[in-house]
Image (tube, rainbow, N blue to C red; front, side):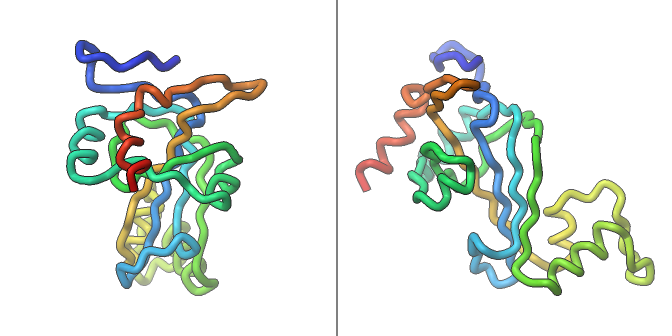
Length: 172
């Protein structure tokens, strides 16, 4: 279970189970949209690299509360968006791939299965970001955090540990 952060602890904070999603948005234009090509990774276990989070916070990143639609897409509750990457040692639960159109989906399937050997595509061990990269698409990574949960299976509240990173969002 998660422990409070102190000055003397190491630089990693273990997140409660199922409290983080990694969403990778892929696009060729640089106009990353949430209803386009993306991979959604439900994270079973991970650690926040506090030094990295602190640096991103100093660079202007903070927890931004999600809208109702986004909260529901992650199973309800209150979720926060963090643009950047500050995780270490994660274990993925489920992975969902979404496509903007059928053509993109077909290209993805060809690359991921090695269905077109003439193009020299090698499917072994490719992650979604590697497949979309082969398709010429850029990547934007967004993290989604749930800081509090109270239900029959999970009960935790780490809001206090991350309150510093919520302050800027509440001032906006």
